[in-house]
Length: 64
Image 1 (cartoon, rainbow, N blue to C red):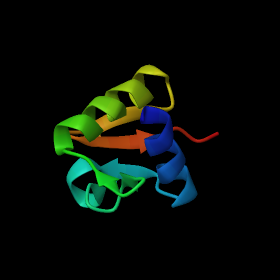
Image 2 (image 1 turned 180 degrees about the horizontal axis):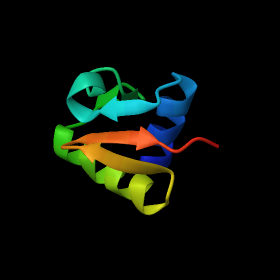
Image 3 (image 1 turned 135 degrees about the vertical axis):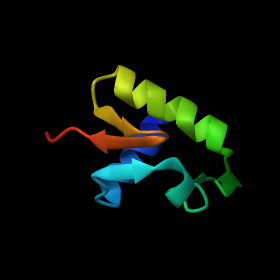
């Protein structure tokens, strides 16, 4: 799911992502997710060196 979240962020051309801002817009097969689930996937994205934390629940994607 972290990969799907990353793909969503890049597809929508988001550089910075606040979990509270887009949680209602990110869904897979009609399923919505909690802030905690999305934040966990953000940790995976940061752990994969694809983004950095810039605030509480806010990441900034690394430029490729």
